Image 1 (cartoon, helix red, strand yellow):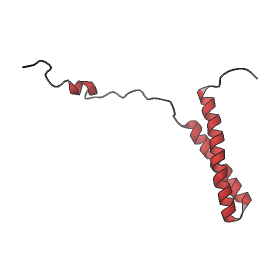
Image 2: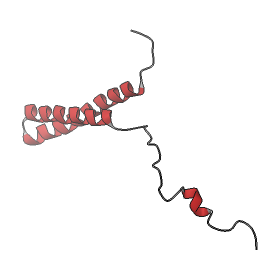
Image 3: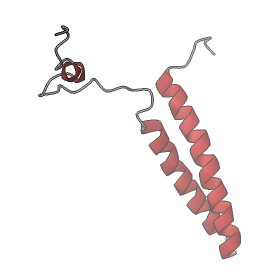
Image 4: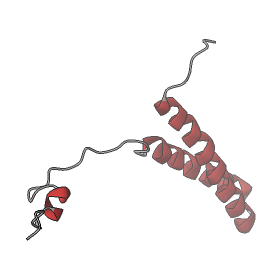
Length: 87
């Protein structure tokens, strides 16, 4: 195994898989106990977990959007409407 740091996308994917399956299996076990059908509950939990892991892996964490162009002007320009020279 190579000694390297994983990329942020790889870390997000790993986090998403672990957290998604943990939450999904918790929900699935609870459903299995309440419905008295463990097979159905665990299979629903796996489906929920994989769905959550994909959603977490695709989430735009840490990505910042570029500021949109303001057609009126910058927010700093609005405060300069007062005359800076004393009368």
